Amino acid sequence: MIPPGGTIGILGGGQLGRMLALAAAQLGYRTHVYAPEAEQPAADVATLATRAGFEDEAALAAFADAVDVVTCEFENVPASSLALLAARVPVRPGARAFAIAQDRLAEKAFVTSLGGTPAPHAAVDDRATLEAALSALGTPAILKTRRLGYDGKGQVRIATPADAPGALAALGGTDLVLEALVPFTSEFSILVARGLDGSEAHYPPIANRHEGGILAESVAPALGIPTAHVEEATALVIRIADALDYVGVLACEFFETAHGALFNEMAPRVHNSGHWTIEGAETSQFEQHIRAIAGLPLGSPAMQAPMAIMRNILGASVRDAHAVLADPHAHLHLYGKREAAPGRKMGHVTFLRA
Ligand code: AMP
Image (cartoon, rainbow, N blue to C red; front, side):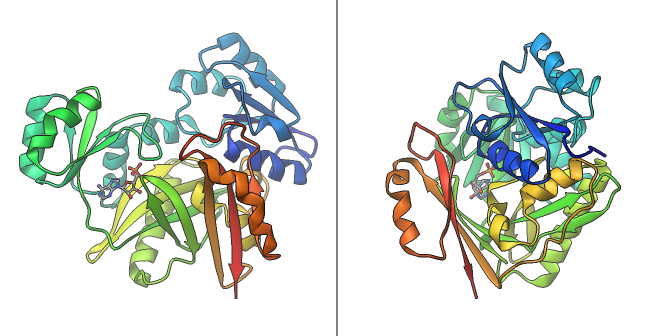
């Protein structure tokens, strides 16, 4: 257990780290953010910040020695960096969750071994394996990089076989996975927190609407999904967390179909679709994550209102973001980013509904 006044190390400097640092402060912890970028929304609200690359072994070692526990706010921290840190300080969740979540193919195999069902898919490493995958799965399909994809980046739709060579070239030609395009009726996510003692708390299912591969809006609870599908998906996420001896918040995304919920992907961290929990749940996902990694009891995930709606503020629309405050019930969160690039997550706003 990390005593009050202890220091939580956060790898990554984005908005998830920022909201983790705010939750940690409320619980009496100091935070130390480690990230390579010049602009770090998390560092603005943390106690300490180190700007260094994930391959900088001396900086990583100094960081590890300055904190009581390390957690990550993004999933692409190199395995070697996590191993170096873990030799000096507890890293929660642990390296195995990252190894799996960093590789779409390994992730699908792991989830299948636990009884989950991902979209039909096949590994693609060259033109021949792509042609074989396309004849097995048909079109339309989506070709994705196995690693380092996010917010719809690193993926190309293949409408007809004629699109295949262009898609292959666009994604580097190897280390890819082809997925059948799932005719989903909706997308939802399940967020589970698992404590150091193995206790578990889960939030209601969250309906997610994406625009151009980027999350636009989340609504909790997701309505219209058969209870059996929600229960199966939640049980699967708990099995994943148990199998990894996971500590912290784990998010999994699902495609809802007539035949059940298909597993899409997991994130070994707090998740954009859980931002509504700051006002909409008794214990936010950020506080829950800090409690878990600090060895504290988990809080109640119960909702504070019948419905919560979270909208992302993307790109230049941040300039008029304050207009939403004309509604006294709007809960606005801005991340303090200076560059409003198109599609960049600049903030979010949450509304609770009776
Ligand atoms: P991902 O980064 O893999 O979660 O993909 C981003 C978004 O693209 C998803 O949330 C879906 O809206 C869409 N998408 C990805 N894979 C598929 C698929 N196999 N079938 C249908 N839509 C997909």
